[in-house]
Structures are given as C-alpha cells and as structure tokens.
Amino acid sequence: MKYYFYILIGLLSYTGFSQSEDTFEKANEAYADDQFPEAVQLYSSLLDDGLVSTELYFNLGNAYFKQNDLANAIFHYEKALQLNPADQEVRENLEIANTQTIDKIENAPESNLNTMVYTTTHLLKVDTWAWVSIVLSLCFGFFMVLYFRSGTTRKKRSNFFVATLFLVFGATSLLFGRFQNQFLGEQSFAIIFQDQVQAHVEPNPRSDVNFQLNKGTKVSTGSIFREFTQIELSDGSKGWVKTTILKKL
Image (cartoon, rainbow, N blue to C red):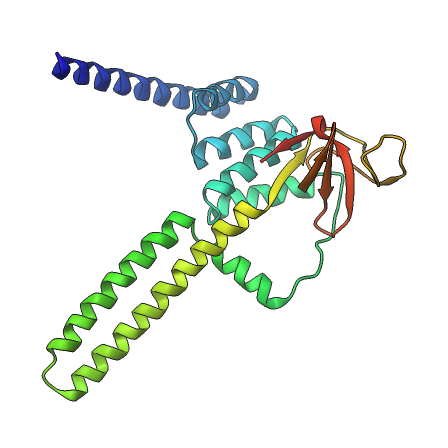
C-alpha cells in the first residue's frame, strides 16, 4: 500500500510541475505576442502557486514594464536580484526602469572600501559562494596530502604554499557569502506604490512634510508606529509614510 502511495505522490508532483511548465510557456507566448496583461496574469498565477525563480520574477517585471507600470516592474526586478544578485541582465533592466521614475535620488557617499566589498560580495549568490568555499577547501586538503607525501623539501614548500592559497581563498569566499547574507538580513527594503506620497517628520499626518515621493522609488524601511513606517532614502533622508503605500521586498 505504501508503495502505491509513493507512486501516486510522484505522479501528482510530476503533473503539477508539467502544468506549471505549460503555464510558464503560455505566459512567454503571450508576452511575445504583446499580450502583456495576459502574460502578467499567467506569471502571477505561478507565484500564487508558490513557484519562485529569477526567470519568473524577471519576466513578470518585463511584462509590467511594457505596460508602463514602473512600480511593479521595479519591484519584481528587485525580487529577481534577491535570488541572483549576479544576474547582469536583470540589473540592466532595473537600471533602465529606474531612469524612468519621477524621483531622482543621489546615493549617499560611501568609502571606496565599502563599495568594493559590496560589489565583490554581490558578484555571486550566497549559495554559490558556499560551493566555491567547499571546492577550495577540497583543493586545500588535496595539496596538504601532497605536502605530507612529498619526498623533497622543495616539493613540500611548493605544495604547502599552494595549499595555503586555497585555504585563504576558501575562507575569503566564505566571508563574502556571509557578508552578503548578513547584508540581506539586516536591511529591509520596499517600493513606493503611490504617487505624491508625503513623508512626514513624525508618524503623524499633521506633522511637517520632509519630502515627497512617487511610484517606483526604492526605500529602506525601519520602525513601525500605528499605520506609519519610517523610511530612509539612498541619500540618507528619513521620514514617515503610510504603511499601505509600501510593498516590501
């Protein structure tokens, strides 16, 4: 009985995967035929079913972009980058979408070291950095074995030197993955989904307005008080906005 149960589960899983694949292909065909609302509906149905991938978010972002829905396009490009920060095509489309938003916000100046660390750590996904670290660790172990089996002092020094390099690179890749994971975990971002949003100095609609934002702007989110959320822009400006106009990444 248990044997047939496992076969049934396998068949159902395969059927679900096949249906999802068909839906994805239909969405791609709708996009290719310029039927963007239908493509959005089909792609979104896959997300509703719990399917997540860089390609799905990217294609959905493209479908929204074709309809000039910049807020949704930027939101889904950002979701794609969360899964694969190294995807250059997604990054390029996101930059194009950002150039068409109303708000033009300058980034706060950062040190060259911080910029270099951020750029390097986001060259690969966290999982990829982990695999790189594992491979380099195996290489370290291999050359350490050669070190102990070397018959001459010259070969021992050479193998030990190479093993040390693999150890350093392996530890560095592990740190890069940890830095990226820590960065993603510490900071929470959201996209503005309403035009002419007033950011108040305090979580009070009667308080002074610090600045105004529009659809598609990415913000960092902080404290929450009643119906307000504190946000911070890339230039360091802070304010309080209604939580309902934000869509968290």
